Image (tube, rainbow, N blue to C red):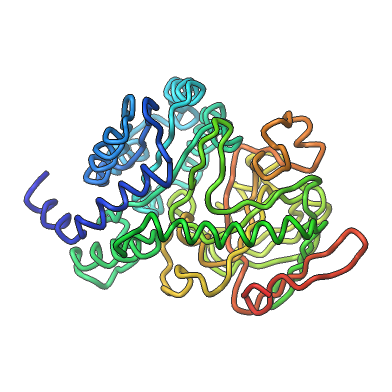
Length: 418
């Protein structure tokens, strides 16, 4: 690490960074003695990777294997690689990851790359590379979305990301501000983060239990720019916070998280809706999204910014125009209160109610671990190479739950739980 890098890293509170690594190990993953751990991270996040390895081995991890990405190497590909290389991906790597997950290796993803890294690159190449990567990653991704193993995502305040969020600040100040925002959202800015997460998980569990007790057949969203009815999959189950994977380990997949979510019926969505926050996707900012659904499928889509990228996403495969997730988040969530746009879905999705295009989660079904892919599809679950969340909630969002007999129950009023 250079003197300059050490100077930037000094902007990050080492005590809170250590707490985040411990939280990821003991709460995010609940890593078990003898269990291997696969970590993916940008090179900028090495200080956090090292802390995670320390805490993982302290709880008895078998083998911690880091896989690092680098922004300069990524850009070199887009600027100098032969054109035909953008339809390829490192399938051998993802095959190895899939094999590791099948052997009960836990998965930790540390995010922190510059969210606009590819903004200046050829969008067609970006789309081609993204699709090739999605296809290659599918065998490993299925182990994640089907919740075969314990997994977790956390964030590191890299300089390139910090300058996107705080462009007017000096570099060290921007990093310090982003670090503080990450630590606050992750609940490591207090003396006992583990206890804080126990309390938070209990709150989310109370909400999922109420929703599961209601057994709504659909949700109706109404407010400025939206009149949207989302049918819910047959046998759907609401989850949020800590969940138990098929390997029997209870983990918190996302840190931070403020959502409770379930599976919509891929063929029973109708109406129109607009986005309330920008979506940062593959280095592009997609803003002002407006779509119309008929029989579950997006039949019209436009965006004030990034429309070309949006349309390429929707054309990924048949399931890309259908929903795989619906999530409820109060407008008063800590991330919403921060007033920040993080340009990162891990954070931005926890500022507002949102929906996700693409692949559904099998864990969002009653006895989902026992269902075959064919059964999930028959009950309304969607299948796709993508899973992309975008925000539709605000302080003007009202939501009613609709029972099978047509009875309506207020769920959200003015962006808050009713």
